[in-house]
Amino acid sequence: MTLKSPKGTVIVGTLELVHGWAGIHGPVKRGERGFEFDHDGDTRLDWDGQKTVLRDGERIFVDADGNEFKESELRLE
Image (tube, rainbow, N blue to C red; front, side):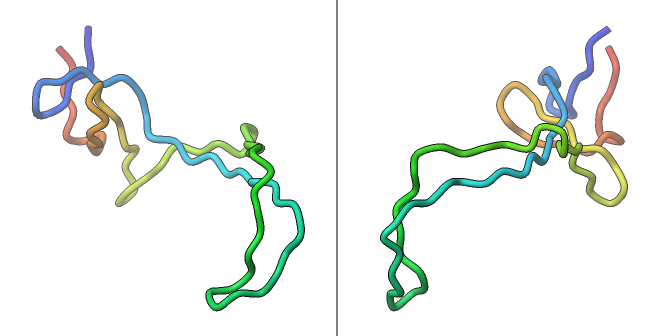
């Protein structure tokens, strides 16, 4: 069976929130809009902290086109 959206598109996964931090390196200075700095080009992700996104208490699913749907909107075919 296949999980489908109300549009008939195939659901490919759940929407996930993964926290991470992008490294910075100096020099750091204060500018008009706050601190100014360069990123070091690397972002470290906290995969152990990954969580499925909920809206109104429902899991959010994503179709192959990147559209998001609440679990209650889906159908199994």
